[in-house]
Image 1 (cartoon, one colour):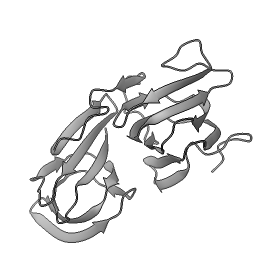
Image 2 (image 1 turned 90 degrees about the vertical axis):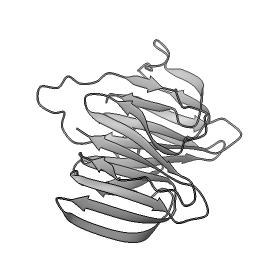
Image 3 (image 1 turned 180 degrees about the horizontal axis):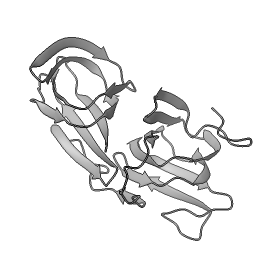
Image 4 (image 1 turned 135 degrees about the horizontal axis):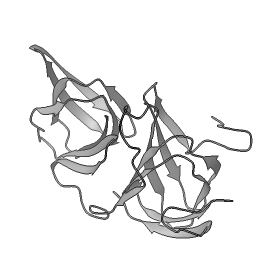
Length: 224
């Protein structure tokens, strides 16, 4: 999906798209590159597998390295950024291992009367093992990003989903999903592969039970 002549896609795999969000996965083996691309939408970035990345931003400078258009950075798994639109860059994996990240582009317009959020980076959980249960990772006037981690046999308990949300499955498996809204209840057992993206309308309460022998983990990006 080329955004403009001379620009390529912003990541290696487009996982989901609707009128509200566009969800990508960047997956780079050592030495591989994602070519020059331009971010025309604000986005949230979550590092799935960290490493060392060489970034080039011709004619522009980075938020993390003002005044520099070419730089290398070491990024840890579970680091999160909110980045306003306008960046132009290419990225190469110069580390020894695989590099992966999830990217949520926000297509829904900014709510009326709400100031546009600026760049934000949080590394509070970077490099740490996920805690069981739900963890708030990032919140601003436009989005909330939460992570849900369930060990084998764990149940999340009934969680409120007041807002529309895109869900990115980080570690898949077999789960039982129970949803309730206004007295209406539905339940199903599903196999969710890693890198699956789901769209959930707001207003439901949801409970997940991990039926697998391995951990289950997902990201939920809620839109305001």
